[in-house]
Length: 509
Ligand code: TRP
Image 1 (tube, protein in one colour):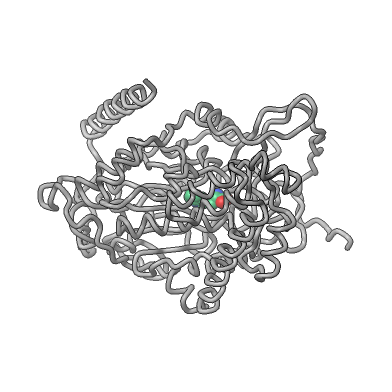
Image 2 (cartoon, protein in one colour):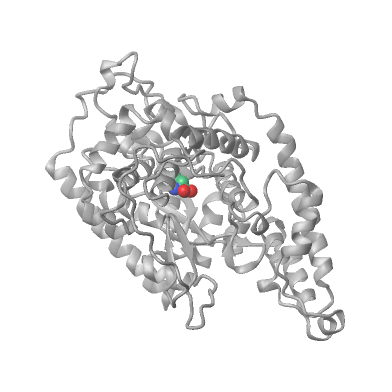
C-alpha cells in the first residue's frame, strides 16, 4: 500500500532514533516502557518506584479495612490482589461517602482501535463493581479527540488513511458498545464521545482550566515539545475537567446552557455541583492528568474538591510481566471478539509459563505462580482468596502442571468472553444512544449517611439524586465564592494535606 498524500501537514519532524540504549522506565499517558538495562534488556515495570516518582500513596490493608467498614462488603478482589495498588485521597472519599452518602465516579477510555481486549475490560469491571457497591453516578469519557491528536502527532503531522477524526469517533462507538456489554446500569451511567458531547458548561470548565495551565507546566507534566501539535497540548484540560460534576449539569437534574435552546437560568455554571467530590479509577499512566487537575481544582471560579484516585497496574501481556497487553500486537492480548479456539490457542501457545521445562523437573522443583500468566489472569477473576491461594501453593509444590493451570485459565476466559459476546449482541444503536444521552441519573448512594441532607451545608449530600434541586434557576443566588471562602478552602486543604501526610507516615512506620 502506498502512503496517502499528507493533508495539510506541518513540516515533518526528524524522528528520534530508537536504539535500545539503557534507559529509565518511562510511563506517561502515551508510553509505557520498562527500564532498559546495560545489555538492552527490557525489565518489568517497577511499581514501587512509580509510587515514589509520582508521589502517590500505596493502598494498604488499612484502606481495605476502611473500605469494608464503610461499604459493609469485602474489599474488591482487585484491591485485595493489588492490581489496584495506589491512590490519592481514597480515604477521604470513603469518609465523605460515610458522612454525606455520595460522590461521582469517573473513568474513561482512549478509543485507539475498534476492538477491546481483556486488559481493557478489567478496570471497567472494577469500576462497575464499585458503582454497584456505592450506588453512585458514573461518567465514562471516550477520548476520540485525544486519540486523533495523538495519532497525528505520532505520524509527524501527516494525516494517514483511517485516522481522521471520524475514524476515532467510530472507534468510540465500537468501544462504547463493548463497555456497555460489561453490564453497566443505564440509569446511573453516562458515557460520551468528546467529539459529540463537549460544549455547554463542560466547555466553560475547559476554557477556565486552560487559562490556568502554561505551556511550561503542560510540557513538564506530559513531555511535550515545540513540535507537538497544539491540540494535543491543550487536550489535557478536557480530561481534567471531566472529573468535575459541574461539567454535566443534566446528570444531576440541572439545566445546561447549549444550542439550540439556551436556558437563561443556566447561564452560569451551577456552583452547587462544584462541591460534589469525584473518585477516578484509572491505570497509573493517567496520573499526570490528574495531578494537574488536583493542583488546580480548588482554584476554579467555583472551587471543586481535589478528585480522588484509585490506580491500577497494567495488565500483563500474554508474554509475561515485562510487557502490557497491546491492541497493536495481536499475540500479546486476548480480544473480546476472539473465538473459544483462538483463546485456547493464544493461551496455550503464548502465555508465559512460570513452570519448569519438563514435567519431571516441574514435579521436583515446582512452578512460580507470580510470573505465570495463566495464574495471573485467574487472579483477576477468581473471587475466592482461599481457592486462589491453594492453586498457588499447589503450583509451587509441583502438584499442578503448567498445562493444568492453562486449562483452568482457558475455561475461565472462554466463559467470560462468551458471556460478553452474548451481551454485546444485544447492544443495539438504540441501547448505546440511551447511555450517551445527557439525562438525569438515578441512584441511591449510602442509605445511612451520618449527616442527613439538611444538616450538611454543601448543598449536595444525603439521600439520592433528589439532593440537587430540580433545576430552579440558581443563577445569581450563589454568585462567586468570596475571598474569605476561598481562603478558608485553602486552609482546609492545607490541613487535609497535613493529615494525609501524617497518615502516610504512620503507615510507613
Ligand atoms: N486518556 C485515557 C486513555 O487514553 C482515557 C481517559 C479519559 C481516562 N478520561 C479518563 C482513563 C479517566 C481513566 C480515567 O485511555
